[in-house]
Amino acid sequence: MELNSLTDVLIEELGDLHSAEQQLLDALPKLAAAAHSYELREALESHLKETTHHVERLDQAFAEMGIRFAPTKMCQAMKGLVDETDDVVAATGDSVAIDAALIGAAQRIEQYEIGAYGTARALASELHLDPTSALLDQTLDEEAKASKTLTKLATGGMLSSGINRKAAERSDGEPVQDPDQNDRTDTDSSVVG
Ligand SMILES: [Fe+2]
Image 1 (cartoon, rainbow, N blue to C red):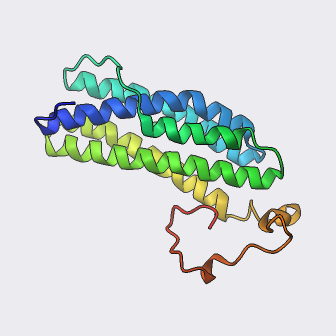
Image 2 (cartoon, rainbow, N blue to C red):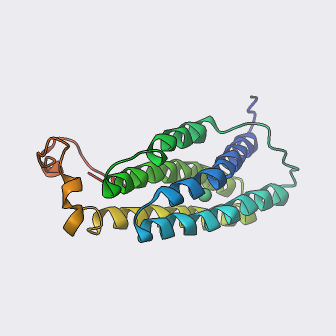
């Protein structure tokens, strides 16, 4: 890789995102199919629809910059994140526990995308590439909303209500320690903590 300018970095970032989004077009239907909760499945399917627009916007961004983009590299980070989802998709056991793991996997993916789109948008803005910056901004907004939806699902009672209460217990029957008693600091995007 040779990087001589911010434009070079932006092109790298956009290429990485293009590969990441393409991988998600394959992975999201599997995550949605593995979801037990209707709301979670809906959220993942709706984000799949948005993802097709994310790919289109990246193509538009390249076109706006006068670049004929040909995918050559795979985003290894997204490959790793998607590989990790395979275990969750194949998991057997309690439906709520599986949904909680699916939310965790989807949140990791969203946070990666939010970081990458935020970087690309900042570069486009620095380079005064306004149409490209606006396209990236739209997608960044949708990624952030998808993450918020996942957080709401995880914290809105779906994982701990009624018959699903047992999912909040460890397999030895002991309740999971109250996260507030841990030294660990949870962030807003922490979904099961
Ligand atoms: Fe996306």
